[in-house]
Image (cartoon, rainbow, N blue to C red; front, top):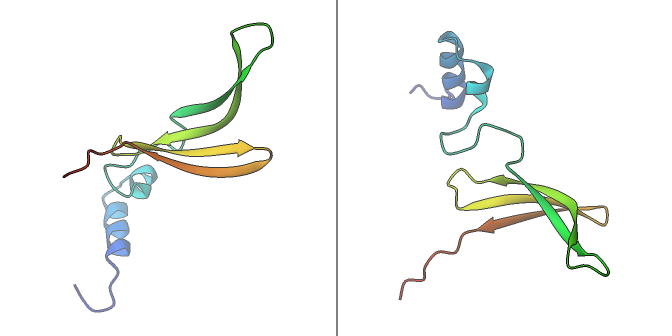
Length: 94
């Protein structure tokens, strides 16, 4: 590759020449989800007085990781946006 060339820019130009769609241009790799829409909704369960049922109060959204081993959560609690990452536990090697 010539000095000063940018592999990312070269890839974009090659994709445009090959009539790739804009959605394909914006994907970074095969393990990421292509949708920007949340895959899950996050709720807070508030107990109701006099019953064993709860009110489900929406407090955020979640996106599943491309490797299916976790979630990125975006919570809105008391007017504050709180990012949270959840990962699957991996066995400890002894």
